[in-house]
Length: 186
View 1 (tube, helix red, strand yellow):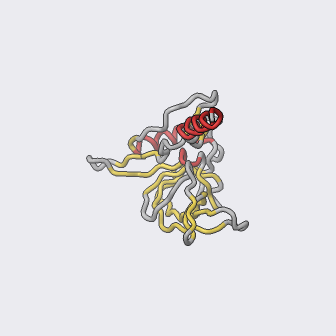
View 2: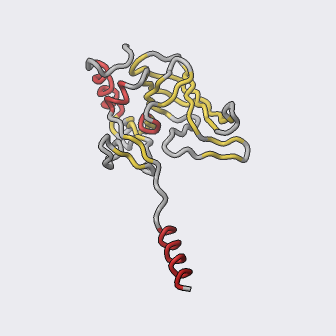
View 3: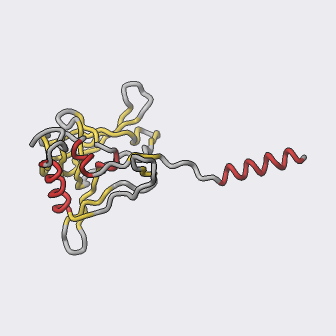
C-alpha cells in the first residue's frame, strides 16, 4: 500500500512539471544578416502545404512577392519553405518555425533565396510588417515566446523587440556594409 501511495505521489509530481519548451539559440541581427543570402520585404501571395517526398513530414511553401531587396539577390517571387501545415485532416504544428498567411506583409532573412529559400534562424528571421496607430510601418518579430531562447552560454535571453521598419532596414544595411558580416554582396 505504501508503495502504491509513493508511486501515485511520484506520478502527480511528474504530471505537474510543465513540458519542456522547444529551445533555440539566439541570433543577433548581425548574425542573421551574415548567415542570409538575402533579406527581403514582401507580401505573401500564396501558401500551400504538402507531404515531403518521404510521406512523413508536412511542409508548407509560401510564395512571397518581393517589394524591396534589402540585401543580396532574389527573384521577384521567392518560394519560402518551412515545416508544418495542414494536409487534409492532418495538421503539424511546428513550434519555432515561421507560419505564413496570404497577404501577410513580411521582412524575411533568407538562405537559398535564388532557389527554394528557407528562413534563417527559423522564427528569428521572420518579421511581420504592421502599421501602428500613427500609420508608421513596424517590423514585428514573430518569435512567439512559446520557445526558450538561449545565448551561446546557455543562458535565457530576451526575444527580439519590434521597431520602426525603416530603422530596422537601415540597421540591416549597415550590417551588410560592415566587413566580415555579409555572406553575399549587394
